[in-house]
Length: 599
Image (cartoon, rainbow, N blue to C red):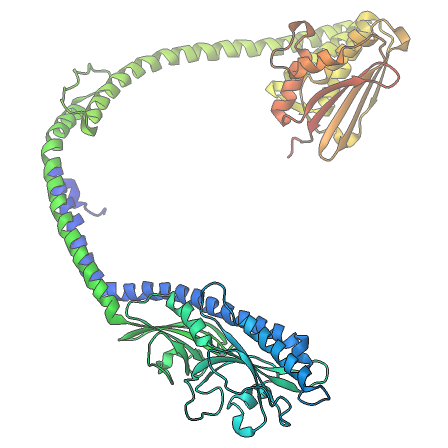
């Protein structure tokens, strides 16, 4: 039993009311559901946006650090640095000059030309014999220079750690560039530290310390704007290296879910009750970039979105109600009249005048179109009746036409056998060739036949010409057997052979020669028909007749017809080409795509 559809018993007015309720009720349900899920969706979308922003920010910081590393590599390889020694026989003047040159070089690298926060490159060298006693030792976080220390008490706290890393640079947050003394300026800074090894002798020359890195990274962090959010750049153990929050230092507490686990690099996001964490980390660099955004700031925006959605829902309800009332009054009456007409109308009956409406809306168009359609349907019924009669007459005429070829075949076959029995073998063979010629020309309605069938057709034509005019010209054919089943448009070769006979060798007697050769190359078959005629040929006129849109009628349409049929079947790159035959005469080449009936 089929299920019952309750809509079938409802009129259009009731269906309009139902439609209105179907449209409005889900809206309020979705509104309620959306409000409950908006927070989660908003947090997820914002988190995804922060992930992409964090990736770009982390790459920017990575490029800054990589730039610092490249500069330190340049300093590392500098000849003055590599030749710096705390032992030797140089004079004090030579040592002073070397010191000044290195000082100038480091100050040059410490200059910024794009108004960005500068970096300061300083070289710290252990000088146990106080070889460079004249060099001052007052390192500062915003000053570049070369510093020699001979006393262990003056050694920076990070010096030995940098030496132990054997030339690998790393970031280090330090409170002092040298052991603190009374009256010393604030030296807290984020360092990029790298030991400089002697390339030629081995050992450590000193430690290159790049200061003010925290200010440089801070510039990159300031390019990101988070609603009440916090940005932290930490080491792998979450020690804060630099941050956008003033006064924040030490260790950053993260939820357990924020731990990267066994992963060495990537981005991790954690959404807790109070905060959204987005962490881009790299174990090789021992660095993390952390976004910490309070959820409360996002929910304030969500409340605004909720109010907007509620206003839109109420407006939608009011507008929908107005639209339903409008359609109720403007559509129901004309549609009911139209239904009344459609129910009473029967094809062939007289169609009344189309009801007039002052409006030109879709309903008016529908009414006028249905009335016009009914009139056209009446006309079509009468037209179809007339065409059925004409079709039957055409079919009958076609049946009569199909009788004629079969009657002709049978008649020619009877004449052939009678001539054979009377001993007139020449006439019998000519009749047989004519029968083949006509049979293959019709080809049972096929446009494409095999090359073997086409050659049989051409051979029959040649025999007819030889018997008719008593020609004694010779014919040579060289057709590979594997090409016999290639498709070719019917009646392609015969007109070309006829041209070679009539315009080339007609009056040459036994000296006349027709040669037919077929070959293939890269999927294309080439059939060359050549004669050894001696008459001059206007090849330019032939080319024009084949390719011009308005050829000269005096050149004839036969070869142009063949050329166009070849192109229609196989493409514009195929067809006929004429050229002079070496030794005299003309060669016409037929090119076509190799296809077979079983393809």
